[in-house]
Amino acid sequence: MSHIIEVEGLTKTFKGLKAVNNVSLFAEEGRITGMIGPNGAGKSTTFNMICGYYPPTSGRIRFRGQDITGKRAYEFADMGIARTFQIMKPLGNLSVLDNVASSAFFGRHKAKNITQAREIAEGILEFTGLAQKRNVLARSMGTPDQKRLEMARALATKPDMLFLDEVMAGLNPAETETAIDLIRRINSQGVTIFLIEHIMKAVVSLCEKVVVLHHGEKIAEGTPEQVMNDPYVMEVYLGVKKNA
Amino acid sequence: MKRKILIALVLVLVGVMLALPNYIAKMPYILNVFILAFYMTTMSMAWNLLGGMTGQNSIGHACFMGIGAYTSVLCVVKFGMNPWVSLPIAIIVTASITALVFSQCFILRGPYFTLVTIAFAEAVRQVILNWDFAGKAIGLGMPYVRGNSWLMFSFRDKTIYYYAAFVMMVLVYALMKYIDNSKLGFALKTIREDEDVAAAVGIRPLKYKVIAVVISASVSAVAGFFYACYYRYIDPNIMLQSASVELVLPAIIGGSAFVEGPLIGGILMVSLSEYLRNTFGGVLPGINLILYAVVLIVVIRFRPTGILGFFDRRGRE
Image (cartoon, rainbow over all chains, first blue to last red; front, side, top):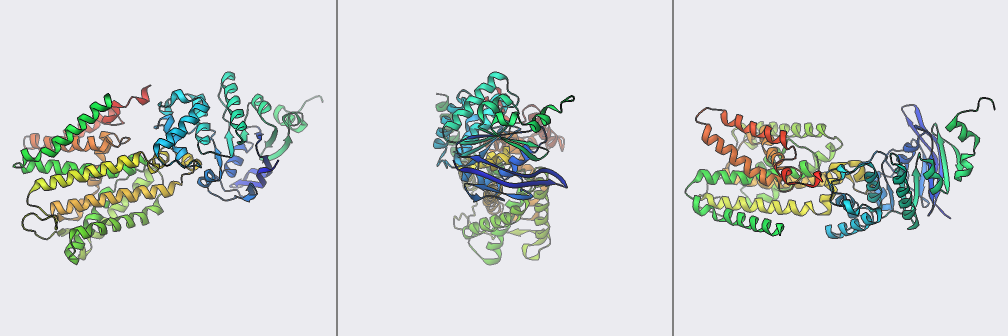
């Protein structure tokens, strides 16, 4: 298996505060990789650096062997990299269909006209289970649907690599199940997935490899079982046993 | 079925508009109101491309129109060009100036961008006001032309201006409608809603914002050309900030989220303001402006999405 994304010594400093410190990781093509860590561990910052939203202070990012450090956010869709946002950003005043159609115009579908763009969008809404809401304004939907819309919009750029930032936060167990199922289906179409998630059940059932961040540093890496039995990870999540 | 009725209604309306001058040819004032309404609507549609569709609120559009008007009048008066030759020059000059200035200013978002448009418009007005070549505060007049001449775009007969303004408005509407459903339109609407999302799906915000302002300014330049040819005289006051505000209102009142917003708002607001001026202006000076303001406040208070917002059911499902 080749490494589709390789990150080397990634560091981000905000006015002296090291948010991410010397993180190296990789994702294997066609697999689902997870990133976990307590609040403020630097997960989202790492994501934003990989996806071109923050320029890294130092470090290299490679996509399929090609150095993409310093590329701007709008260049990623054309390379086949898509992302979702942790805080949902629906295009509120557009219909759900047009939210997705907008991605189909750009990204890698490059729809020629609105009919074609909406056709592609219809297919993706069908796939993500939003088809019934196609004519609803995006801002009037609830959290679960907006989370799904985030994924639908990212998918409409026809990515090879998909970054999901907490797409299951705020969902109830049943909705989480649906989301897990959707992520599996996306992955089975050959899209490599890299996700940040707090819901351990989702991480364990989806990811083949997990990276753990704490205070901006990578503290563990491995299969979910390995990581969850790592003494340091247990300490970070649960605290130190007093009478050990 | 509903669509058919709508199309029939629009066709009837267009027919009435086209036939109207036959009945009001002897009433130059009424004709003037219509021409003014068509002109304002065109300007408002130009504004709406940047303000409504892209979400970059400008209060300097009268200046785009002014640059267009001044360029074409200067070309005609000082260089002896034919007005039709001056039109493309006016468009190119206006487009280049705005592209140059605004490509640098689009890193500013929201109210800061609006402030820049105000400052830009005022700066241009001051330049003209102090520039001998451009006639300073006295302004410039177009050369006198006898009778009706298409070659010089000058007519004694107002009905021709009526048709010219009507065609200009319809063409600009068609352009806006086309953009609305095109790749460009989707890029602009995505940028309006969220620039980070735009970037995430592969839209370069700066590039599309510059395209939007250039198209918007070019349309304003065409309207400015028409203004200069119709009134035959321009002075720096056409670029006053109040003029910029005035042409934002039709779009807001009609519904800036819709391509048809400025169309509805322009026709309604211009006829309303003229009607009020006519009816009340002589009775109690100033009352017409107060009533106009009251109408504005009421519409904005009860339907911030504009008149067309009443008919948009999507948000309430």
